Length: 302
Ligand code: GLU
View 1 (cartoon, rainbow, N blue to C red):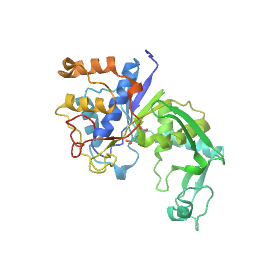
View 2 (cartoon, rainbow, N blue to C red):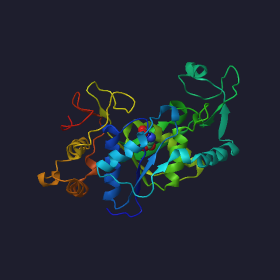
View 3 (cartoon, helix red, strand yellow):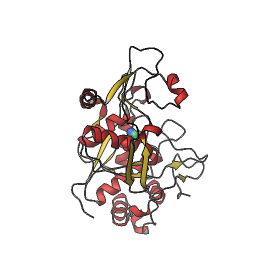
View 4 (cartoon, rainbow, N blue to C red):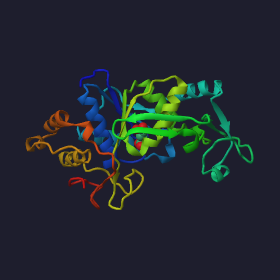
């Protein structure tokens, strides 16, 4: 398959250094983009200052470089794109598809946190803005790894937040605006975002934006079965021995071992990986890394 119009991306939030799970998403999206002869963009999703760690974005970019994952084009920072998100929000407000909402979490607790109508006991000076999700709204898509996915967005998610009551942009709005603006043709990321995808497709539909293809890669679990996350126990990936770490991640992607001569230098590894990567072999199930190895992968996946 060769498609010069393929555009993939990796979009980390700078809440900490890259751990093995985020590097897996970076590697998977890079492999698919490069194998298709396309472009691989990097976008730093820095829209939540309270959750950011100083210097994390630069550290993440340095880690990608240490693994030979070099972005095509300028790295985009969401913090510099507020006007684009505002424009999208204004469009939805003008069409009556978005509305101000004064409900707090506790107001919605009785409905399991799902908003179908406003039940706020009092109005707030700083309402959130939500997307109105029509009754019966069902979104279906075919994920390249997980197959056919259907979600009843009204029942499972409800009217969802586009701009938070603290004034910050919701991830769902920003990601949709940017994926369209950057003309991303396939979104490749971790399976923790599988259930966000129907919301994103719905937003694309109401904003008149194209829907990219989606491929959600397996989650990596730590020795206790918990998802690796930048904010929990997962420490940075070991970039001193990139080939060892890449070989472990390659196995996590369900790929057959590469020939020994590919394991000597990074460019050889990358050539062999691009020649041999088979997207149909990527597993759907979450993958447990051996206990205590999730910080610096040094062995094959279980
Ligand atoms: N910024 C999100 C994260 O770091 C990923 C968003 C995406 O790939 O759509 O988990």
